[in-house]
Image (cartoon, rainbow over all chains, first blue to last red; front, side):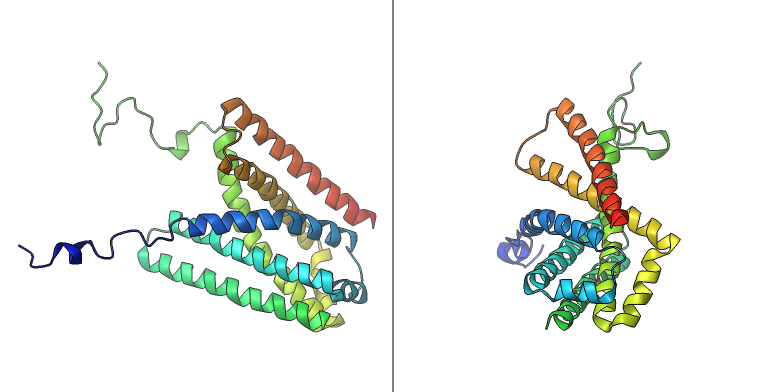
Length: 124
Length: 134
């Protein structure tokens, strides 16, 4: 017989009230990435083989820089959410799973900082 | 006589895919391709950020990045990433339509699946024609 109260047994087992958050942000970032990636693909293709000065001038425009920061951060957030699901579905060893989840999330943060810093350094 | 279904003997009930004897359909292939292209694009995101960093670091590092992108292996990789991008984008829009409740009828699912393949190939071709035309 357990001396724990019914409340103590139930505590922590319920919904964290954030079940839909991952799903929702994956969709929001997906919608945002549709115009952003189409824009980037056209821009990069039309600049293919251009010299450093041309690319710097393009990124240097405030509108382009803003778009590229939005694109990079949204892209990395979307990738982090997606990779999390892939790891959770296919990696069954708890330790490896935890390590990969933390590593991928950290990598996304580091890459986002690097992207924003690079764009700002060119644009400012 | 048909065996009785039980956890160890599922009888004639459908099994989850046994990959060695599985008959592939467009729907399942496109589904797993969506995930695979997502993983490939996550790797592409790393290259995208490194390219930005190369531009920010100056003409010398940019020249190194351009040499890599222009190499045979680099061009193959970039082509693969373009195809993965447009596949994931088009199939992503298909998923968003499903999320809104549209397109669940089986003939519609097959039609939208083929449309995604055609659109992804066309968009990839357009971007590379533009890229080599300029």
